[in-house]
Image 1 (spheres, rainbow, N blue to C red):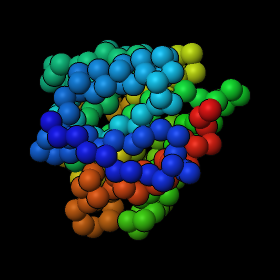
Image 2: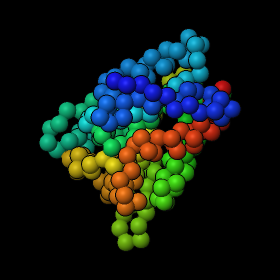
Image 3: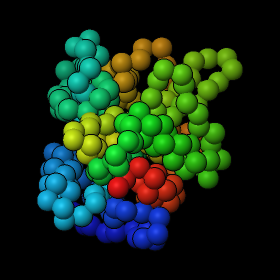
Image 4: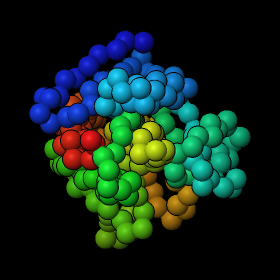
Length: 226
């Protein structure tokens, strides 16, 4: 698995951002969990201020703490249970996954951090001509339509322990949407799922989106970390 870094000016970011394993060198989900655990250990030992990982995963279903059995894949596909918030979702090639493993500064709330991550995603997709938005009572970034329910473009599911954040965000860039048809995505039965490519009318892979996301995340990390 190749590892490369996309540097961000130190004046804007307190945590290095590393781009790891874009397609075809996707990072196995279990390895992603290990990388997050290693980043947490470094924070707890005072070795650094955190690490932001950007990558793609091979196809995998995961279930957060609030997942219900009837939301699991209808075809019996295996599901990895994890300690993040949220419910059942899918990760795979064509989807940009970002894990901001950082310690929030004193007084910074997790909900506020989620809102800031949503803003970073909205600003990122705007560079590709797509208008993302929030939906009241639902996390992530959405696209609204006048004549049918909103569709979800990006997911957010975090875990916080002792102020340290793990797990993160996933932006549907050019991935296949068929796997979502086998589950109740994020536990929301009355909303669809879409991709940046479908909305922009051209193929936009994760490695093209990652540099823009890094820029906007750098400001979030600077604001919310010690």
